[in-house]
Amino acid sequence: MSLQDNLLMGKDNHLKNILNLEKKYFTLIFETLQSDAFKNDLLSMEKEIQDRYQDFEKVWKLKNKFDLPAERLIAHHIYRSDVLSDKITGMYTSAISSDIGIVVGDAVLSIDVKTNDLKGNKGDYNNITAEKNQISFNNKHYKLIPTISNLDSLSRYKPHFPILTYVIKIGYFDDGHSFRLIKGNSNYPTIQLACVPNGRLSKLFNYNILKGFKTYKYSDESESNFEVKDKEEAMMIMEKNPDYVILDDEPRLTYRDIGTGDIWRYTSRKNVPTMRVLTGGNTARVDTDKLKYRLDGNSHKWEGLKTIVYE
Image (cartoon, rainbow, N blue to C red; front, side):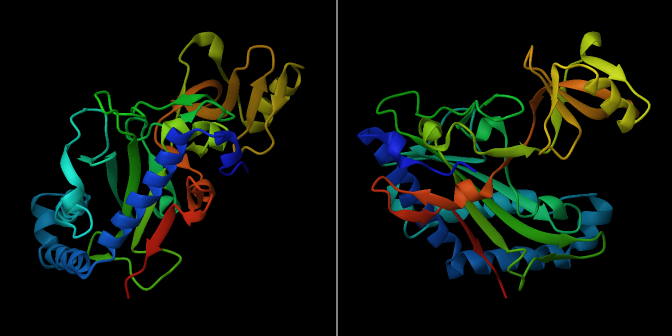
């Protein structure tokens, strides 16, 4: 596992500044999320959904009754925060950004708000996920497929502030009959806050902070797909070709073609077992260890992933 290596930074004061800004605004956002005002509003939101659950479920047929209110809640408290409001100078105008984009005195804050249903999506509860438009990190060394993000590392117009990415997740439980926030369980925290490193810092993490994708993209070209009876037949076919090397640490049967660099994976196409060439991924899962164990511009340790557990 390649954690942050500040030795690769050398004497680059620009990178040191970005590292310090990421820590600075992470601390201020986390303080905002810990405030009594934020907690009171979040609990009021929970009560609103509980009281009107049947309306939301039966009348408006809302599957996720919490995502829009949660985004509204975060935006409201970021703009009214005692520690952030006086630093806000405007909004970030690009269409490529997270849910909230604001300009502060020395940076742009791109804040993505996520809600996670412990009932419906327990497997991803403690994963930090992101779309290409929400991060600027360059994952060109991701072992399966190089992945370049869409968010700019710096704002396009002067003074070209660094764009800092933060992810806020709030957990809830919705079984189709009732709703509640997740409380009293440190294994499934109520709130998670993460800082995804800016793209200019990519080399400090060996150009990879990913551990996979929720879903993958595959080639539709005929020469990049072939049907098989089952996993065993796929393995037999692939191992006959000396150019195919199995990637043992992959949970799914996966081979690299050492001649072309193509990645072949065992999957299904129209419910038929198939070996297909991987071309990309959609929602990325970020390595939480690489987010948590961070160094600032002076190589002082800090945590870029923290949680809050309500009782």
